[in-house]
Length: 237
Image (cartoon, rainbow, N blue to C red):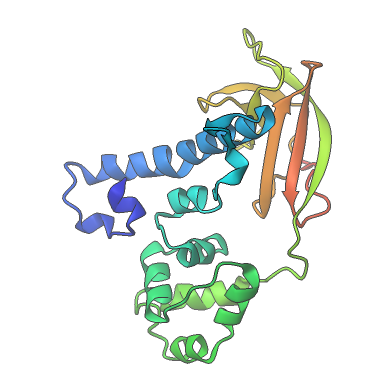
């Protein structure tokens, strides 16, 4: 975990078994831990839990925690670059460090992408690294910054069917997930499926979904935070 968060090259680390280590990072750090942290954060906010001596969780800066774990870096700029769609961790670290970049929001990020230094490096066709220059060009071609960057909540109530033997408590926080086929799944905090919705929704990656069990146990209260105005479109098959 230390090597992952420090941005170290994992293949150069002396792990006992590199395959097991990568599996732990992909399943434990990239998927399970961010979901657990988000569930704790949402619950603490809802219950106004005191973290320490009267201080609640909303008084802490938590914006970097999940991106750092998901992307394997403690550098906010690197995390933002990878969240924008550039999928090479080592190359993202080099792109940021070689330009001394310090962007922390979308406006600064877009200004960095359009800077003379980045444009000059891109034209060299060997940047961020010779092996990832084509990947970088593809990223620049596909990256489309949204004209509306203000996130707003969109709330809906969705009907849910629980699997046999499942009877979660009211206000239980759950996760929505699309499998390879079938309707959208309802996932518990232990990452096991406990139910499903009555259809398959197009779950957007450009925002955050938060779902909890309504007082009527047959429904979920779902909130989407993002710039998209229609985040609950049904996928027709």
